Image 1 (cartoon, rainbow, N blue to C red):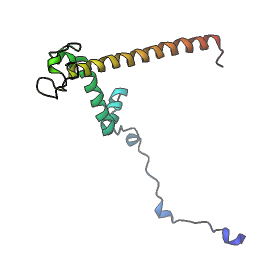
Image 2 (cartoon, helix red, strand yellow; image 1 turned 90 degrees about the vertical axis):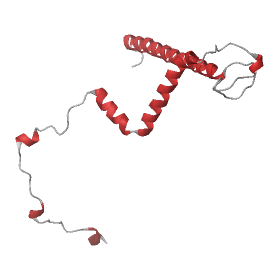
Image 3 (spheres, rainbow, N blue to C red; image 1 turned 30 degrees about the vertical axis):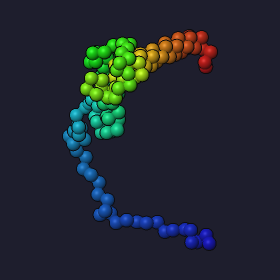
Image 4 (cartoon, one colour; image 1 turned 180 degrees about the vertical axis):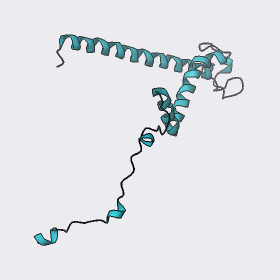
Length: 143
């Protein structure tokens, strides 16, 4: 059984393996132009269609959270009971709620508040991490 596992060495013909000529000028040629970090990141993002569409949606939400309530002529807290529970129309794009408030304005105002809370939470985490990281680095307790 041991003899069946042993194989003879394979000796390929020499004409199949021809060494390349060493050309210093060709070795130093730049195949593509050098890109900085942001150019490379943008090219990679453009190749990923799902990531690019997600970026477009996030930018749209941020722009609408900032400018959405400004577009609408209604305030987020204005009540008009005579226009309660209206369906979407040219006057109220998302309709009205049970107190006659414009849902379009309230939606984008709520998005503005949600974005503010998210950014504030990220900043609090960032500052807390800097403080803890700096403390452990100086005291050496984390090692």
